[in-house]
Image 1 (cartoon, helix red, strand yellow):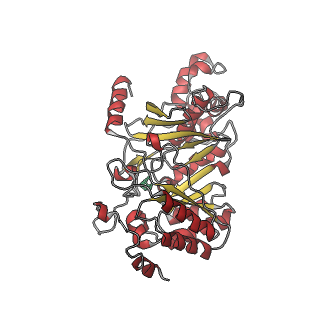
Image 2 (cartoon, protein in one colour):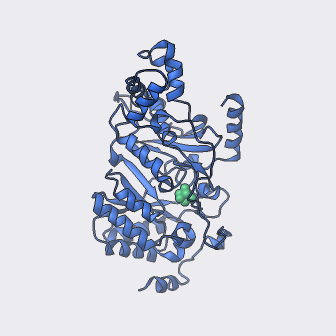
Image 3 (cartoon, helix red, strand yellow):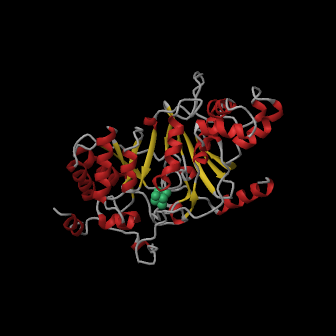
Length: 419
Ligand code: SF4
C-alpha cells in the first residue's frame, strides 16, 4: 500500500486532525516557504568565559590578566571539579589578584530567576536569565541509577513547530558554549549541596549529573558549533572539562540533515535522537515545518548513516498527539520505513504529548498509545513509551517557554542586580 492510499484509507474509523484544522496558520517567508529561522538574530554577545576557551586559550587569557598560565588549570579545577565560581573558595590563588582573575575568567552567565520542584524534589525546573535578559530553562531529574539534565541550546527556537510552546515564541538567540555548560555546573553545584531530592538515606556516593539531553529550548543542530564545543567540554577529562561519558549525552534534532551528517563525522559517540513525530510527509510538512527542507526519507537515511558511522543505536522520538499522528497505519508505516533501512539500528520512543497551555491538542488515549507501541514492537522495532517526567511543572519537551509571570520575575531580578 502506498503512503497516499494509506492516508485515503484512514476512513471514518479514526478522525484525522491537522494543525490547520486546529486553527494554526503556518507563517511563511517572502518566497512562500514555511518560516524557519536558522540564523541567530544579532544581539550583544555574552562575556567570554573559561568554558568558551580551549585549555591553551585559557592559559593565554590568564597571562593577559598578568598571572602565570598555570593558574588557568587551578581555575578549571575549581569550576569543572568543584563546580564553584566563588573566589572565596579559591584559597590556592593569590589573594591580591583573585577577584580580578575570577571576574575575568568566570563572569556570571546565568541568574536564577525561578525554581520549580515536584513534591519529592527529585525533578527541578530552573528558569535562568542570561546577560541580555533572554530567558532559558533547564530541568534536572533523578532516576534510579542516573541523574539527567535537560539543557537548552538556544533562547527560543526558530523551527516553528506548531505543537511546541518554545517554537511559537520564535528564536531570540543562540546560546554560547559556556552558557550551555554553566547549566550543568549549576546543577552539579546544587546536587553537591544536597538540594536534589529522592536520594536514598543509605546512599553516600558523590553524585553529579550523569546524563545530558539536548531537549530543552532550541534546536541544537541550528547552533551546531557551540553545541559541539560544549559536548567536547562535557567529555574532556577533568579538570579541562567535566569528564562525562559521551554515551550519556543525547543530541536531538527535528531533522537538519546536513548537520546530522556532520555530527556523524565528529567521532564523538553521543546518542543521536531524531524527533520524527510523523512517518509521512503529508502530515510532517505541517507538524515539523523543517520537513519542507528535508523530507522524512532524507532524515531517516541520515539517521541510518549516523548508526553506520558510529555504531550507536539511533532514537526516534515520537510525540503522540490525539487523532493527529497516532493512527495504527502510521505505526505500521513507521515500522516499514525503519525496517527498510535494516534491523537493530534504531529504537522508538513514543511520548504522550504535553499539551501547550490554551491549546486543544492533547495526548493520545491509552488504548491508542498501547496499540501504537504494540504494532512497532510486533514489527521488530524496540519501542519504549517514554516517561513524561516534568510534565507537572511544564518541564517536558516542547513546554519550555517563559510565561508572562516568568518575565515579571526576571524583571524583578534585573532591577535588583547590576549588569
Ligand atoms: S519542538 Fe524542538 S525544534 Fe520544534 S520548535 Fe520546539 S524546541 Fe524547536
